[in-house]
Length: 206
Image (cartoon, rainbow, N blue to C red):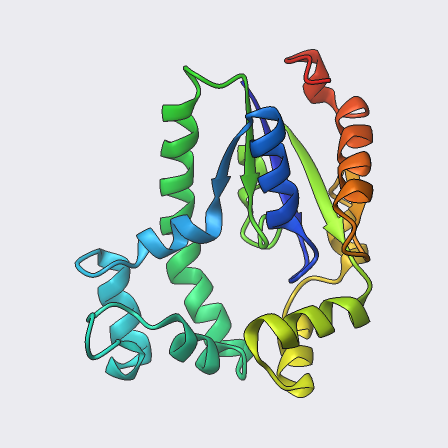
């Protein structure tokens, strides 16, 4: 089994790359962001820890689940609160991801682990190789404003809370530039990346 850690800044196209790899090549993809949701579902130890630290206002009154938007508004305005959140959620998520990789090993030669905070969270030790998607900050800000219906100030705040592209890319063997909305051009880059990847030693994809 060979695990590719797919990371990148916010709105840099990670999910699009993962989706193309899954749909066109049938590669198993694990979305760490979705696994983080599992980590703090109602009734889990992480759920209880988050409520204890951040209060009941982060709970959706109807579903009783933790409301991501409410939690996001708290942590993106305070570095200290972000650190508290990460110290609770990251270890729990890593355990879930690790089990998912282990359970998938039997049926999959190659696995993609998509994780925006792969480097920051220290999940790179779960991977054999790192890929990073990258887009110019101005493009990412516009995408984020449109996707999340944020003001430019709010989008900038979220961008600044993440690791700069330059620092993230130091850990990556493969860097995929994604400044345009051209799927064909992006797929061409992905194919080129596969040919340059050590994963080819495990599985002939192209």
